[in-house]
Length: 589
Image (cartoon, rainbow, N blue to C red; front, side, top):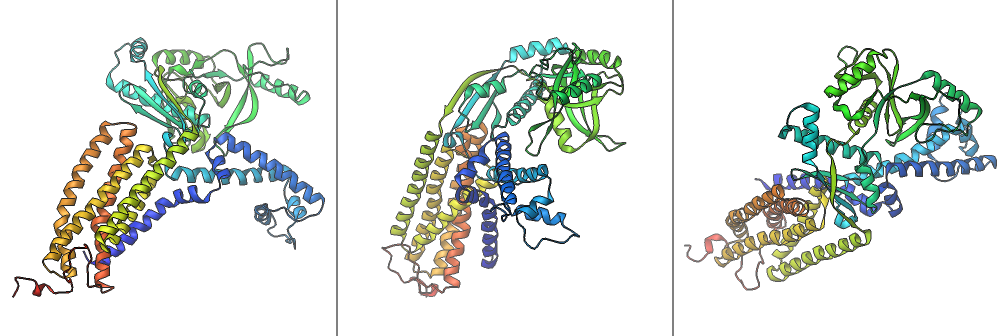
């Protein structure tokens, strides 16, 4: 391949690597620690921060407007929003607190401020998700191993479906369990959990930054509380009328109210919630529902979001087991045209009318957006755990231990790299500079690939990188030793370089291919730390081969053809002048 093409390929690769590594560089080196702490919090904490900060800024703006002062620092974003409202109107000569405040109602300014602060922290949260992640051993947190009760599952399956549990059924139920756990952890706003299968009947959960095991166990082991009940519009209206006169009266957690005679005895009051801009439940209003449960979520099997071919509207469809189908058919037959509320953990998620009697397949339709339909589907899937789980192991790692591990791992990585680079410079003279640059670019490539695929950096991963340093410099050693052999024959610089790389190529490839095969077996058969080590080792193999055979060769060729260098210093012991042409080598007439 021509040197020009190789040069452009290197530019393209390293440019793409910078784009992949940019989120990591920006997150760890340019985002202040206080903003990092906010972004690492749950979405509920981000929402509380946005509301609290917006309330403080609103009070500051109001005080500045009363005193006729300039717009307080940091609120310039309000000017852009105000200019949009001034279209077609005379624009104020100066944008002070008064001119900005007059353009918005108080509630609109507060919402604008909340959006400003919330969106900024959510962008940082997305940036952190695209950066290199730190594993539990580096960041601290909690790990839990859950064991599925397969005997109880087989017995329950046999009772419900009148047949034995097979391997396909087991895989489907485990996938549903993983989906339920993901939904629960996300719903409670916990940061960046890792939830995956481990073996045939276990689930492994990692939650960085969390130190309270009892809180997490309560979340993941809860039985779930999804029910379908009829809404009572008249009782809803009666309660709302009463609250207008007595705003301090609010329902209890179980749906009862502290005042007798306002609503019928067979009715409960629950809050109706919708997702806000942070993806969290936001209270909208109260609604009255019957105490009688039409159907509970344990009968739900398969849930999907589908679009109606005739109307084009999104809807949520779920199937019921045979027992649930009979119950729901009898219930809906008696209540055609009535509004039906879907309630999860004493919160109303959606209300839809019963258009006809329903048996096996239920469709919740309406003018849903894609997010609304997916939210409803998530609620339905999170109704109950399909498999009974028991905690068999849990570990909690403190943040101080994680920080100490990062420091020690970084020292080991940099120390190993420095020792190798010093040896190459001392032993191989100026050619060692080539190896040093290739080694630095090798580390750059490895971390870029780690960031591009959103891999997690753990202590075993650092060990894999340290091992890769030795393997990468080993390729340079093989090449340089081949070059020494060619130098002893009195060849020119260009011939020495060509022969050195050509003869070392398959030796380097054989060593790296066999190591890569071993790493692939480790990644497939191992789990946890072993898999992390294997992944980092695999990444290092690719990057070291590229830098040793492609980038390093390009640097030698650039020095020879562009800079006009004639001598090649690979050893302290070979004194031959490599300026000699091949025609003057010993044994050549």
